[in-house]
Length: 132
Length: 114
Image (cartoon, rainbow over all chains, first blue to last red; front, side):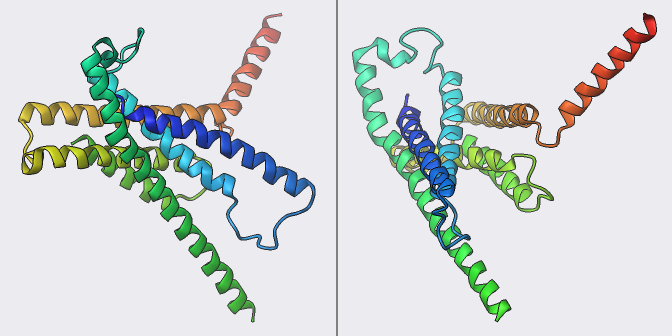
């Protein structure tokens, strides 16, 4: 009904954190406080992955809801809002399906971050062993 | 069906991204979009399965057809978003080059007339 709105809210928050983190990292580079580990993937880039996944999912799921007539281009935009019973069902769906979707994406992203860090450390180790 | 089509699109986009020759086509964005949507539909499918049990895997033919249409439309929408981004950011400078070329052509035509 409107399960994608939970992920949309998360996407907005993530985008804000990503922009802030980008600013902080840029300031660090300008102040030449770059970390001793040049091979480390910056947090802002990792947040960009999460942001892309969330926004992509939200846009495509919003399209699905338009397809099924659950989202309309006029106020109140969600057809479930016209009836209190439907609205309560919609909020229940947001709390269950919507939260599950957001959690699944976030868990996948955390796993991606972990794997990418492992790959970067492996590459750095390979470089050190080849130089030795 | 929508989930299946999106997962296949995500796999194809990922393989394309992995075997890409250069980094200019913004394929990463497409990959993340498809995987994001796939994961979200997976969440939906989990609740669908919990509700319908085995019947979830035997949908009515009309529902399947509608879902297949939806899946293909979703893929088309994602590809359009990606294409617009590629054309607007113009990473290979193709759009700019063609615009400069046509502008120069127009200029030389005007000069020839005058």
